Length: 83
Image (cartoon, rainbow, N blue to C red; front, side):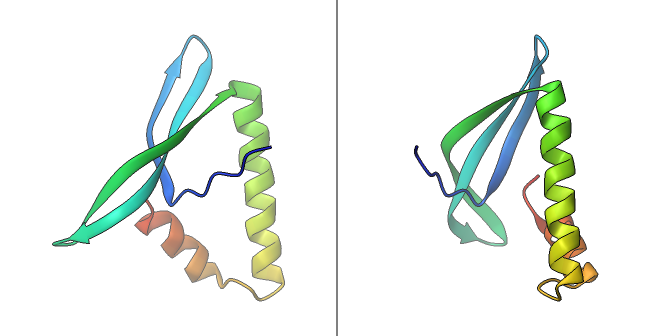
């Protein structure tokens, strides 16, 4: 199994019922603009996307409960991310 590190997601598309997400890394930040490089892609069916969303939401909620994240941190990550 291959592990790919990604800083975020770009270019989310829906084609023929399949969600495609480009996985990207930030290579440099200039003038508050991130230069990104695609490092992979993820393709999910719509049901798989919904299950993934639920699993990620549960993981974030657990980190908030465990004190690893504060709710503001979780919101900040979403609002300041590349999604």
